[in-house]
Image 1 (cartoon, protein in one colour):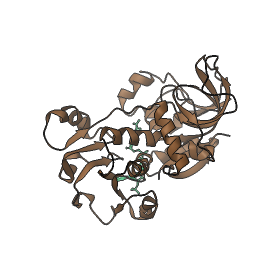
Image 2: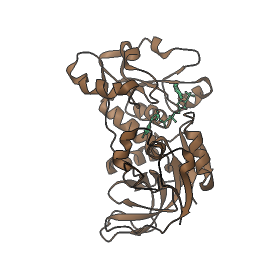
Image 3: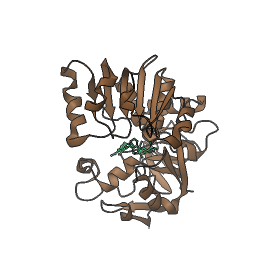
Length: 320
Ligand SMILES: NC(=O)c1ccc[n+]([C@@H]2O[C@H](COP(=O)([O-])OP(=O)(O)OC[C@H]3O[C@@H](n4cnc5c(N)ncnc54)[C@H](OP(=O)(O)O)[C@@H]3O)[C@@H](O)[C@H]2O)c1
């Protein structure tokens, strides 16, 4: 099978197209013929090892898993002897940041992991982008206990995480204010945001608020500049560590301090989460924002584009 590999950490150029054997599923795994994957910030982060801490999971000196690709949509072509949940021919989508593998024509993933049947009527292309940014947003909204009537500000609403956060917060019953640049205002309104701030003309830090959650989905702000926007029990969550890791530190001490606090939840994904995304997708309340769809041969170029930090939502790769 054809697979994009990285045999060392580094820039997008370390990716190479190789011919590899089709992986064999273990007793609790499924083998998926990958139809679509995405180039996303998780794959890029593990490939570049920009944050050295990622090497604790992916290999200290060189990558343990040369084939990246955490998001996937495709068809089940073989199942392990103990698998009851899926059968050959099922169309599935999901997320696997333990074994990755979707930058290839075939991948193996755990049948009881973050995988579910494709939402009815959905294409592989759309379903491939339903988990990466969306599950980060989901974890953060759950950590902030967002529900009916909560006021939420999403900064960086055009990213994969931000656009997911807007839709998820709306479906949880929150009143959502989203921040993006002029060309994308209508697109973000269409995701259901109650108010959209054009950051080319307006400083979101001058909003009256207060908000139960200020969610910086692109990690460009700082707590100290947003604190005044929060209710007394409100919280600030950023997708980045912040200068000198301040968001982690402030998250750790937050519980002991009165007033608005920082949270830094560790992201997780379960089968139940992916099933939830599937139900919402079928109900029409969740649809990934897609910037572009590229061919398998264009994966390196797509990676360079994603690393400009300017993608709008998700970049999908058609594998076959
Ligand atoms: N290390 C990891 O494993 C990992 C994994 C996932 C995510 N993350 C982090 O999570 C963040 C979000 O990722 P993502 O994939 O959702 O989106 P992304 O690709 O980082 O964000 C793209 C969007 O950010 C907006 N943007 C760029 N600069 C901005 C600024 N200064 N202020 C506000 N918005 C700005 C752009 O829209 P406009 O400029 O048009 O508003 C663009 O649409 C990133 O910082 C990423 O590094 C890290």
